[in-house]
Image (cartoon, rainbow, N blue to C red; front, side, top):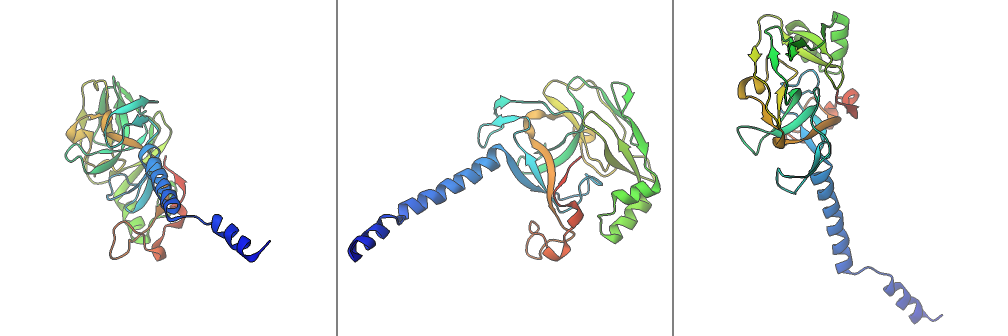
Length: 253
């Protein structure tokens, strides 16, 4: 084989700029397809879902949990399931379509929901099983929190465990005052009743009513990153020196 033949062979196996650009566009399209149809990241901005979700928990939202939508619309191509009691969901705010909110499904269509001042929720007249945690159990729940927030929470809140349809999760209620009460008529078809796990510090269905299911983006499935502080120039990027290691790659109950 001559030198010229070797050079020709090498040139024939090189990629071209159009091929490279095509590969890049395919990769970008695949990432966008996964984000549109399957999973999307979301950063927790407030304390309304304490103790389940902390500020600066980075979560993955399973957009495929309830169905498949047309891109950039709220219209479903296919429905696979409906939200069930206990699901944590991310949805478009009833006040601003560009704002996404996270809450827990408490009641579904056909349910009548009532909430007492002590945080006890009843569905169709039957209280959701609930027990107040012992001090050592509450301390275990907040073990991954930063020390100052941990001590304040244990002194301030009553920690309880609820057991709805999807399984047990923890809630908070203030020790020193009764929270908002609610008595709803039967939830109409295509709607759900939502509440934050931090029962006395959550704007939810007790104030703006049942939510249309079409506003739900998906079910919150797991925490993939968590940090005590973000980088100075970004609320979205974690400070690598302030990670909450024990919360990373954990399932959301």
